[in-house]
Amino acid sequence: MRAAIAFKWAAFGQRMWIARLVVFCFFFVSYITGIQMIVGTERSSDDAIWHDPTPQAIAGVVLFSCCWAVNLWYLHLEVKEMRDMGLPKYLQQVNNLCDLASFVNVASLAPLLFLGRPEARTLGAIGTVLMLPKMANIARGAKKYSLLTTMLGEIIADMIPFLLLMAFVIVANAFAFYLLAPTDTEGFESYGNSWFTAYSLMLGEFEGSSYQGSFWMNFFFHYYTIFVNIVLLNVLIAIISDTHERVQEKSDERFLLMRAHYILDMEADLSKRAQFDPLLFPKWAHVLVRVEESSEQLWTGRLQAIKAYVDDGMEKAEVRIYKRLGHEFKSLQGDIQGMLNDQKKDIEAMITGRQSLHLNDQKIASSVAERLRSLSPNAPQPRGSLAHDAAEPRGSMVANAPQPRRATDGLGRSIPQLHHVGARCVRTVEAGVGRRSEAINVTARLCRSAPEAEDEGRSLRI
Image (cartoon, rainbow, N blue to C red; front, side, top):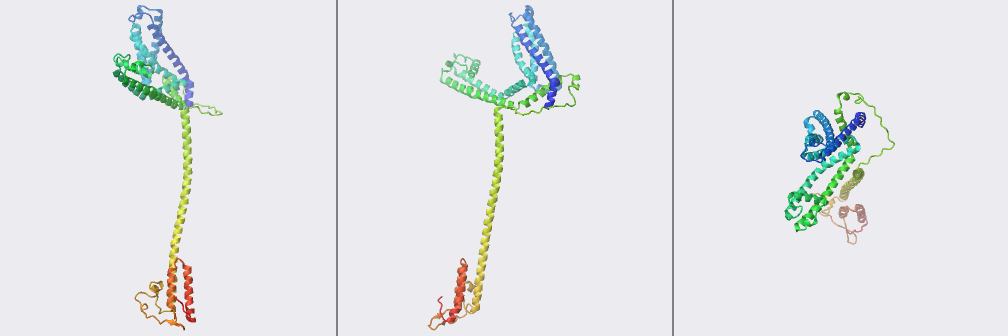
């Protein structure tokens, strides 16, 4: 796209732009000079030019006639553009409306100047202002002027809401000053004078004595100057600065876009023969681009460049932080999960060990009871013990069997029977779940000592 715009600009665009610029300069100079020579002639405002012609007036008529001829050429271009675009689309653009208004103004100004009518001065002033959009349209060909005109257009568009607010503030405060000021106060005799005084106060022009007559005039004076001169004007400066930075940020792209539109406008003004010229509109073009040794970026606005740099750095920092936190979180989550799994395994192993210990204790108690029954099958077991529950079920005849006679030694001391020793062994096993090894050793020792005591005739105290 850049190459196509550059080729068309070099082929015919620059030449046509220079021609249009020269025509506009001639149109503007002839308009200003012709009106000044005609209106500046010393004569009565009601006298026509031909009543008392002077060399200055004649020269002014000649120059304004040239301006009128150029105005007809502009009308030809506008009619052609209107035919190509269509009337609804043509009327949607502000530049086209200003061009039509400029043509109507120049066309109606000519007879008023020749007749010497005082309305010619008013139309001449309006026509001067209408020259500005036409000049801005032609300035699109130059890069610097294109950026300036684009910036002014963007600033005016952004200022519209602010201007409406400012107009409301001025109108409201002008009416307040008109109501509060005494009738003989200079500058507030009517609402029109009050509005002009309020507008001048916004620019810093005021008479201090006019606002010292009453408390409320003094109060509104301070309120108006602080709110308008300080707050609103600084807001306006901020809006203009922001618009300037936004336009400057994409200055190259905006310039290419403006030049492309201008080239399209000039293509529409070419003749049919020129539009089919292969030199101006080839099927293809070979483009050579020079490779720069060092590519330096253009300065695109201080605030926007700093903001873009900071935003890019913040985004990269956030990405790095998120990645690092994600890895650390996953590692911490894995460690916690491993700790939980280890705790779970330990708890399950503890429960399994206790269950197996309980089963082993029950097996040991049952084996001891079986051994005791084998040694003394008719001996009763103490109630509440595992041996008693294992050896003597409830309701059995063993529980109701008669107790055997006690054996005594030669001194008359009783010798305990094996079933008493067996009961002691069983109770020891039941009470020693937490001290399993010690209980088993005591049981084995007692079971081993009972037969020896009975054989040797020694008594054991249970």
